[in-house]
Length: 429
Image 1 (cartoon, rainbow, N blue to C red):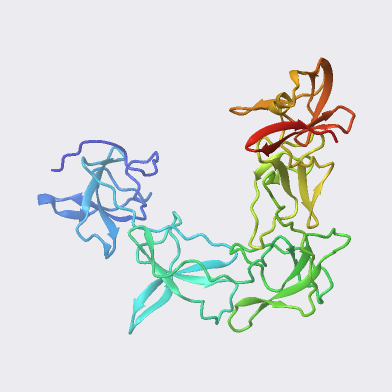
Image 2: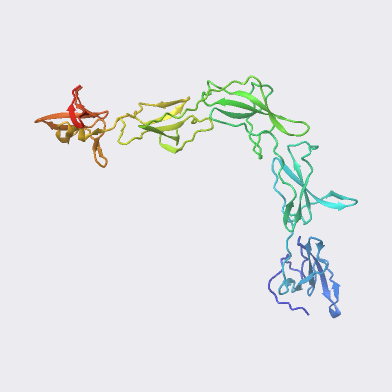
């Protein structure tokens, strides 16, 4: 007699009648028996309500690669109108496969193979109650966008084995339609349905799931450098589909115009100035975005921003005005651009060598000084006061030279070599 340790109820529908309902399991079949003398298996009989009586034993046959298990295992017994598991019962492996997803380009047929005289896939297989297909189901690919007699149709691409689809070829269809035309810094494209001629605009067309445009899509080119009023667009190609192969390609019109190039060449840098290029975060301000890169043409796309930077320290920039520009219509457009001046700041030592002393920044006036390891420099535009022979001079730094404020007199320290002796002279201009 089998040990019947109860570990859980089998999943069957409960009723108020005595007896137990038969099982419904897509992964197995069941045999119901009553134990006779010497454990002889006597088929159990259902009553008028379709129930098996108490003390009916149930034997499960798991479905596998080669059909059902022929031995089977006793898995439970009906007691007090409930099925109870025997101890140690294992579930059958679910070897079925879920259906593959379909889309607007591909669908599938599920078939069973017969061998007579050769292998023929001629029996349609339907999903079971759980929506799955049994093991050894074959799958055929149907490409929706190709003719039924196309050589891409009707391929058996795989088989369900051990709960997985084993593919012999890809479950996707070859791309149909036409790929998007390449946008660049000069042109971009819009796509419409063909409306009978080159000049009529049809409805907007979107890409299918393969990323292509269906036939007969009409491609309209737009020029980036021109406004919509100046360039309403020109139809340049139509997506043509072959009636025999189902393959598509772009057929271009003749006499296609050219678009102006709105991109900008890099600005010329030198020892005193260089440029930083970046993308605009939005077109209402000039805040710096990610760094911009030149394309294969060696140019920057339209609406690239540029910042002008003085690069040779202590060379400096004149004050006032924005330093940002924007590429518009192949030209870098600066508004009140702050130019970089190829001029170092003024050297304080020059004043000492010219006899000035007690150099002071004038109160309330601009002065910007900075020191390297040896020399104190004043930025262009700095104003100072200095003593010379008992008199106070008002001086201003401009383009690396000191001059009297409001006058043309330039104080420049100039070296001349007399018999290897260096002297400094005050030159008035």
